[in-house]
Image (cartoon, rainbow, N blue to C red; front, side):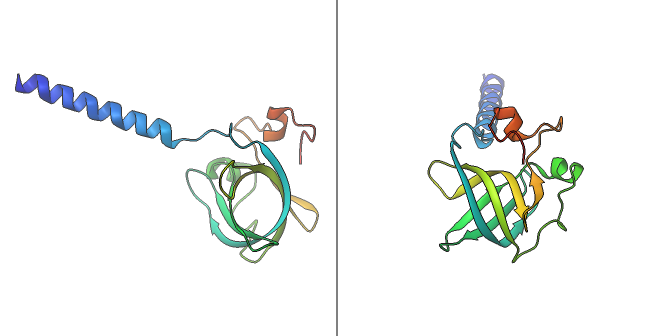
Amino acid sequence: MKKHISQLLIASAAGLLLATTALAHHGWGGYKEKLEMTVTITELKLGNPHDRLIATDEDGNEWNLLLAPPARNRRFGFNEESVSVGDVLELFGQKHPSRLEMKVHCLYKNGENLYTYRYDNGRTSLARQRDERDSC
């Protein structure tokens, strides 16, 4: 009987862990509102699960800017030397519905493309969504 209860507890714990992991990974489905804005980078958080930039907009609001996972960004040329604290960037992305967070599709510095969100196959997030812009 004790062995059966132990197996049940282990199976329950494993199920809970899997469910928690599944809920922790987000999708982009809720990020609907498209925005273009200018921000100033205040902090770099480059690492798993996604590279992130913390930035303030022209009204002083702090934004969490989500980029692709670090391995993918490095493969396509975006790294810790691409951007610095204090840089003023123009961006295009999609806003989270309830917080100041954005999935960044494109970053520009001085009018030049600095970053494009890409999937493993190299396809851009805009092309994948069949966005009218199609690319940065």
